[in-house]
Length: 448
Image 1 (tube, rainbow, N blue to C red):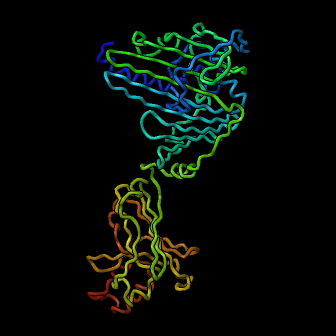
Image 2 (cartoon, rainbow, N blue to C red; image 1 turned 45 degrees about the vertical axis):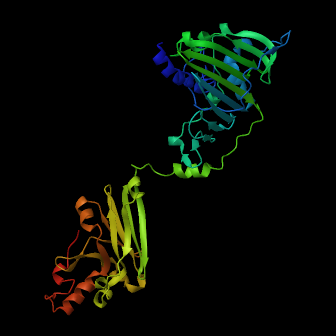
């Protein structure tokens, strides 16, 4: 490894080891041991936490060791034993120190994981080497919700799923490299102590890190009488040129059988975010406005992202007197409104006006029609309309590109159409509509 390449790659390579240390399991996702005896390079959740023990801590071995019930099989039995206990708390701390010349930079990441195997629930708090803190929560159904920082929430589709088995995984090595040190205490954890001093046994054949650059390595396990690892410590130093990177990882398993998993107070907010559609999802939203003559509504189908942006959408009550003159008011039902749907992704628009049932004879409700003004001919044109006599509404739907373009931003009002046409004929002597009629009898029929 050249000095230039080595110094550039060291931090990345050892950083990768920092986030995977203790997560290289030889277990399947259901906790069943596999037959593979060596370490794997697979990475699991990139978070870690817990108190940072003293790097100088040493093993205090007793002269006569008490054998562990499982011997070196603890590497495979670890997760199974914890599952049998029902629950556990896992605290991991990783410290990475980079030295070069007169400069030294130290970063720490921590993770606390609380797991209940019986219910499937889990909760983690993660402080990464760099970036914002992260929390994740897995519920009984296996759905994971998360929060980054204090205000960014994510649902299951955008959260890295919590795997309860991987959360309790440990680094695995060639069992032939394990040295049994006997009963002792390491960094406050007591049990049967095993050590490994060969980087090749840990990951030399599976890592892009050149073993020749590894100048110091030790891995320690403290195994409980029940057969699971209660503490694991990994120290690694790598050098290339003038650059030195030291990684120290500690993983501690506590509250075995007595851990409780909290429900985070931000869960409801994350669920609300998860319920929102993606920006490209096509959704239908209803907008409304209310005037003196009742309520108007508009259903718009378009992409979620555009409807939640700054697009001009919604009905607006139109108070222009030309739509409210004495003659029109004799035949008009409901409110007068303009309907805006200036959108690039609009697929469908339905406009709807509510009317007072008492203002319309039962026999005439089905003849109500939406009309809009043709400003060229200065006449009202009826459009295809639907009357809901149960809910007392008149509606019209536009789906074609031509209809959507034609009716965007137009004013619509609902009229008792046959009566309105008859009134026009009486007013303008059958066929002469007059220059200011706003509705000539020649427009008696028509549609979209």
